[in-house]
Each structure stands twice: as C-alpha cells, then as structure tokens.
Amino acid sequence: MENFSKPKQRYLSLDVLRGLTITLMIVVNNPGDWKAIYAPFEHSAWNGFTLTDLVFPTFLFVVGNAMSFSMRNLDKKNSSHFLFKVLKRTLLIFFIGLFLNGFPYVSWVNHQIVFKNLAEIRIWGVLQRIAVCYGIASLLIYYFNSRMLLFISGFLLFGFWFIMYHFGTHPDPFSLENNASSKLDALYLSAKNIYHGFGIPFDPEGLLSTFPAVVNVMGGFFVGKFIQKNGNNISTINKLIVFGIALLIAAQVWNIVFPINKPIWTSPYVLYSIGMDLFLLAILMYIIEVLNFKKWTYFFAVFGRNPLFLYVISWIIISLVYLIRINGVPLGAVVYHSIFLNITSGKNASLLFAVTYMLLIWPIGYYLDKKKIYVKV
Image (tube, rainbow, N blue to C red; front, side, top):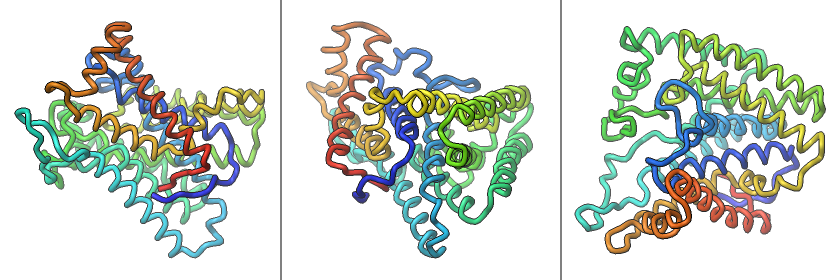
C-alpha cells in the first residue's frame, strides 16, 4: 500500500456512504456471540434480503461512484499506463484478501499452536471479489461508451440468469446444493479451498457470481456520472428516488422466477441492492448537500477516507485477539464474558461488543485523517 495526499475534492455524501458501509461491515463481522445476533445484522439464510445483505453490494456501488470521478481524465493517459495501474491494483487487492484468508497462519490444536496448511486456504473472499469487479469494471468503462456499458450490464444480468437456470440441477437450480456457481468452482478448486460456512463446499464470493456483482460497480459509476452532470439539487434527488423505486419494482417482479439471493448474487439481488443504494444516497445528499447539515458526518467520513485499510486492520486485530489465549480461552471470549455479559445479556451484549470494537477502530482512521494520510491500494 502507498500513502497519498488527500484526493481531489469530491462529494461528502460519497465519503459518508462509504464510511457507513465500512462501519456496518465491521459491526456485522464482529459480534460477541455468533449465536446471539439481531435479525437485521445477519445475512439471509438463503433467499431474501436483510440490512446486512446491503453492505457488500453498497461497497461495490461506492467503488463505482468513486470511479466516475477518478476516471474523468483517463483519456489524457496512454492505455499501457492505465492497464498497468488497473492490473496492479486488482492483483494487490486480490492478494491482500488471500493474505487475510490465511491470517494469522497458525491455530490452536490440542492446546498447541500449529501452522495452517497453506494449500487449504480459501481462494475467494470479499476483497478478492472487490478486486475482480474493480478490474473488470475499469476495463469496461475505459473501452466502452455509456450506451454500450448499459447493454453489457444487461447482458451480464440476463446471461447470469440463463446460466444459473440451464446449468443448475433441476427442479431447483437456485438452491444451495444445485446451483451452477457452486458447480463451476468445484471444477477448478479443491473442496478444501472453498468456503464451508453453509455446511457444504460453496463460496458466496465464487467466480461465476462475481460477474453480476460487476453491475453493482457499474450502477455506482452511472449514478456518479449522473450526479456530476445534474448537480446536488432536489431535482437530482427526486430522480434518484424514482430510479430507485423502478429498480426495486423490477427486482420484485424478477424475484418471482429468479429469487433475490445474496449467496449466489442473483440478478434481482443486484437490482434490489442498487435500488436501495439510490434511496440511501438520495437521503444523504438531501441532508448533507441540500440542507447543508454536515456536523454529524465526520465520524463516518473518517471510515470513508481509508476504507480498505481500516477493513484490513479490523480483520487483523480481531484475528489476533482471538488467537491469544488466557488459561486456554481466547482473549476475545474472555473480554466478552467478563465485561459485556456483565453489562447486559444475549443479543444486546453481542451487539454491544461489535459496536465497541468498531469504535476502537475509529481512532486509527481519525489519526490517519488528521495526519492527512490516505492509504490507497
């Protein structure tokens, strides 16, 4: 990673939306007890949509939003420079994700620390998907005009539906056991390198479902361009709301035959999440840009200015906290039981732990912002 000076001025709403996303990412990833979580802070078991299901696609959306600003002057640079930059960033983010999947590379087995088998590290993950989506979207935006980008986005969504339906196992091609995304990953990955959180080898960030996720980035890009063209005003906000309603309706109609589903990142899930992002961005724009009510925004802007770095740091710290043991008990569990369960109980204690951990990460971002250090991958 490299240090850069503060980027050129951009909409504060973008920093806040990005910061809100990272804030919620840290909270939902770090409950005190995974068996005691309020429903909005859990992913849908399979089909459906929760607040937590909005977090990841929103991050992709703000990646696209940022690209609408950063790629405005790319025509001034030669293509080889652009391609090198995109490839470098894509690979760097991908391998950081791979690094996190194995971190801290040791685990406790029979009261002894042993090294993990590197051959069994999960290949895909959150950062890996962000990397690939960024890379593909960057190339598409660089080489094609807006009309062609819209066509390609539609092709990706309908093409994914076609593949999932025709290559999944009937009569239920969109189920955990029968979906085509899982089948494709099994062709080139060992079961040991695939996520097992669903009880069987299935990766919710696998290769095939990454392609519709590219459209979340494209959605953010189009919205960023739209705002730049039309400005921060009530008319723009109203149009974002109308577009959002249209996407939500389209998603619900499509949901009849192709379910809204985050684990396989279905096409209606893409439309639904972008529609929700349009509503969220419109609200933020109204409060921040139109009403000029900005005093509350700094907390989230801090997270939004170093998002990937703070996400990585939060992952590393919590991994070490649970690696350290006191009398055979992980330090994280000791803290949770001795402090948080003495303050409250059940889901409240679990959520309080997560929020407290997020608040402990914030000073890191605050320090970086005050020093004008913006870590860009």
